Length: 342
Ligand SMILES: [Ca+2]
Ligand SMILES: [Ca+2]
Ligand SMILES: [Ca+2]
Image (cartoon, rainbow, N blue to C red):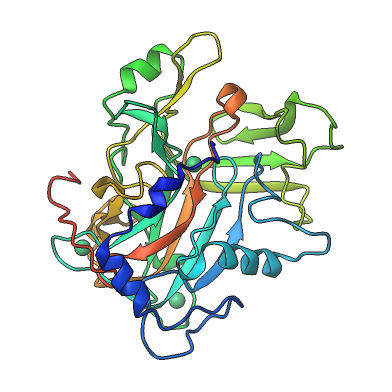
């Protein structure tokens, strides 16, 4: 990932958003689950679970302090991205995820996009096809049994542009570069805790194995020498499952100096800019486990996981960053989904 975001991005807040901010009823910094008044806000008010895969920003975004528990890290994640604070959490390598909730149900309005996951994607100077796109796969849950939690059978995946099979304009280019350009549903990967923390960069840092009979290592790079393994977890190995997307990083220089991360067409997090209509999501794109479209009248929880398993040279592993989620209806943004999706 690239953690630097052009500052002027934040200046272009829509008038509608300013209005929404002005009427924001809750600006609690304590990570509370419920707003202080009854008025719904367009933003994340809960972090149900933050479980990143190993990665170069793990233990830093948010910062781990010795003794922190998983609950502490959930709270820190909420402090970073809740209530429109637009800090950042990194989900690490493939599969790392966050589950967020709201103080209301995000309504699925027909013909319109309903929410947007904010990330730090940007285009390379003068480009419209690539830059820093680190797509996260999005799932949504409606709390059908009203128990205040997303249960396993309540999740549906947002079918982005490479679901169920890869379909991007740059796939041939990625294939030529030697990338794995398949979409793999039901992908599973296990990362193993390193026996010791190397004090120096190494290409063979955190070993992984997947369910495609492949294995490899996550590298430790020179700019990030802290542990990449989530320190608040005791596990010796961490397994993550979900849809894996085609590898979108291409070294345009051929010499390891210019990695272009190509943008997917629609339906992912941290893939297109926060201002682009193509980063907005229509709940009607949700599908069930068999891939059949489902109709949800609204969603209560959103889960995002890093969708690509790829190390891009000095840039490091592809890792989705999340800066918040906005309910577009409450924020007053009207984005037609016609022409964005399939
Ligand atoms: Ca909709
Ligand atoms: Ca539930
Ligand atoms: Ca990113």
